[in-house]
Image 1 (tube, rainbow, N blue to C red):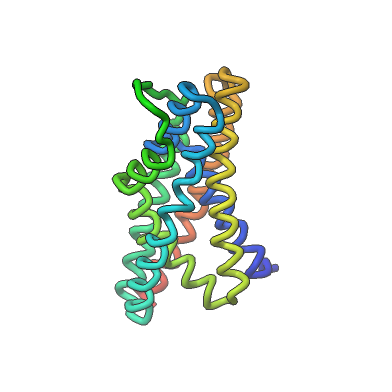
Image 2 (cartoon, rainbow, N blue to C red):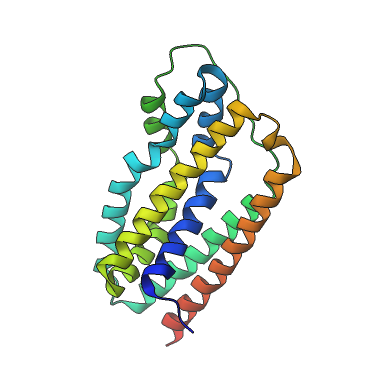
Length: 209
């Protein structure tokens, strides 16, 4: 039995957001660094970076994806590339051990640092152009509610995951050094692997269909 499109795309947004929010990377390292140096409130500010920067990424990526959506060889290739990105994310997520960060002297400047870090980070560009935009277009075709739920679930979950990191680092610093974090990342890796298979299947259907 197929899931309701709103629920289905909401779950996709949730999965992508939690995986992106918990995975080690430049923004996560900055969340940890600012939290360790200045307290959880500065870590919370860094957590907002995806909301500030990813909107333009999504808009541009969806515009370009819409131009080629009727060209099956191109959309099929994008889906295949998306599956490779998801496989890489699954592997990177699976092998995550603990989060480490180097600290530095200076004023907090958390929002500015976070925005500059995310703009210089290739991961959001790769994600939105190969995975996020095609998924967003498919959600839009299903309904405006499905698209809105996908974007909202992604935004809330990626920010929420990093807020949890900031809170946990400030309150329970051993959380990210024990097995709980590793097993959470392995569960997310399996979810990403399943999505990679789905993207690869869709891509092959478009290429050979």
